[in-house]
Length: 298
Image 1 (tube, rainbow, N blue to C red):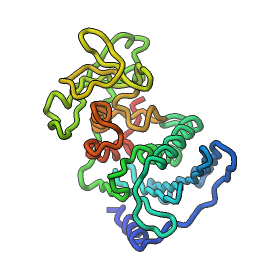
Image 2: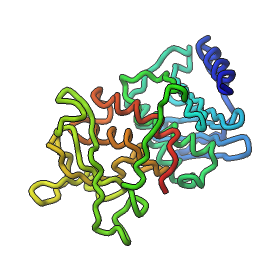
Image 3: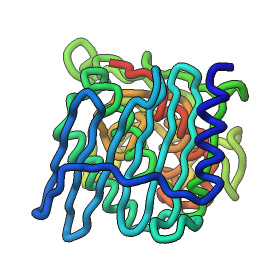
Image 4: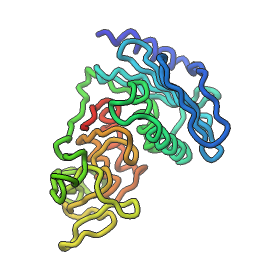
């Protein structure tokens, strides 16, 4: 397979503990984003509440992209081959290349960077591939639970993939125009946890996928014929509507991928759990390849 050579070289370099060399990026001292996009890729600096991030994304060979993000003494790297569905993610301490874990301050800073990238970069497929895969990788890292190892591989020959649910996010994911007032329930958004498996009705929801109504950052659920604001906690298959339900990415991002694994992850963190809950780790890891590689629905 064509990918074996570069994957072996990358894996050998990282296993020897050598941190990739720094790249020259636009420097920014004040709050905000400094972004440069050129033929060699996308790179820049981001400062938020006194903390800084440097990042770069480039095509290292045809169809192969390398992303690097440095923040708070942490180096995050990704090698991505979208056509083959192959990815290798890693994270380590900048000082000594020791293994590291993601923490809440890291997620908060990466979430702020993700918002800034979404505001600056063109949405969806309009962005250059290097910029799009930077945005997607940053989004994955911004949601990364403390208890999930930063180093992980997904190899295309292992049969990993994604199931698109674009038909459940009609009219660009909104109840407007010809879709106004029309609900298209996806059955079933589900997860497994200490209360039961995917087949237990308390772990299932009938979800309206798309960027719909929100209330104080939460969602609506149907109770006794009335829509209430909040998140039902392991109710038996309630109907739920919330911002960007089923959409890959942190919050509502610059890409528009709706997949089964992303929907199940949303179902877990919005159904009696939180983003970093250990019970949602398996849904999170299953959705990583969806977010990195699934095509946009609109």
